[in-house]
Length: 547
Image (cartoon, rainbow, N blue to C red):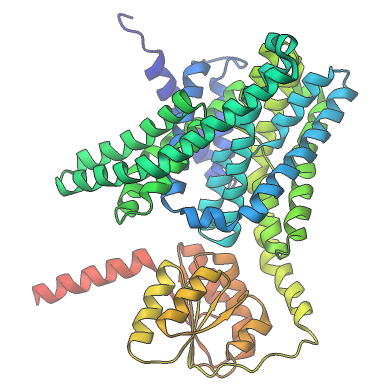
């Protein structure tokens, strides 16, 4: 051929086979992720047939990580990040320590050196950005308390891994023999200075420049130019963060999104990046499959099972125990623990570094890749089981906790609103603006304070608890409005509220047909789905014009 077509061939092979395998997975009613991973195995170097360029696939997958973290940052604020620091920072560090210790013990049992066992344990301790966020977004959990804790936890893990990637060569490479502890401390100090410098740059300079650029482009009226500006900011900041400040692409993109998320154009920016984000996220899963050699399952079944057990059981149990120790209920602990029960991109980088430093055997890299593929494959199943548990078991647990409690004097408002986020705050302002009585149930203190300022009576607590619903006066209320974005919790609330007050009119919010069906089955009278309501209002306007 007259031209080098390796890039085009990789994209065509990756997306084409991923589409076929994803469609097959959908037909079999299993997670499409399983199809994407299998597609990677099929186009990888370890199976006959089409062989795509693994190096190019990994770089394309990195773009998916950047766009995904940028999109999460758009819906995240500095206040959200700081609100979970008390659990995310100590929790993530403790969970990394536990997983690293378990991986180190497995490495030593397999006869590896201590240095290689440490690298192996670190690789098993960090979750995949793409898998965690895709799981949360699929269930509208990113903006919930559970989602904020999981994302905050992920950010801390990324920062720890950035530090590890710089310190490992100083500890186990040639410089480690020459510089000793002084060289190690110097490397650590340089990393910390770069991270602080990156944060200062983003919150002092970029916080003023980036929103101004986006607003200027928006006023130009060109949608093409706006889309280009969003992509340039996301990719440019991520690349600059990695090259200049030595932090990860993902971390740079997250902070860029978080800064732009404070502007009124954040939702439009998120919509413009969505198609590319989904396409490149698929390439991430394909790239994981391409790295996997199926022979390892036959040649080393015992070590593979032990590796997967550390990732899925060891990490999850540690995270669950830590979240519960910080006083959060079992639903939050389960969500966070299941979110972290997989490994991904940072694990591959650490494995490659360990092999390059000649401290980690190539067998260790094979086990890490096998553990990554299998844990990513099982993660959607674990999430489904967790959702089922939260729908059934959490209700029974909290009802048992409420037995014997003396309920406080209930409120007397006719309308009870659950959730005072972006949707709930608009509902609250409309009702309170008309002078009507309103009781709001909210578990976030900053949102509860905003509801009080608007004139509502506020109950701070978990709306899935029967005692909280009774305190809000649900047994005498006429209407219940559920504005939270999380469908699992909404379903539990509907069921309890209907049991307390059979005559109550319940209006809930949903994001999919499945959620609509579930809420109606549990007792909701009306379920509002944004897409349907928008279509109805636009059609009504059109009919009025034609009349």
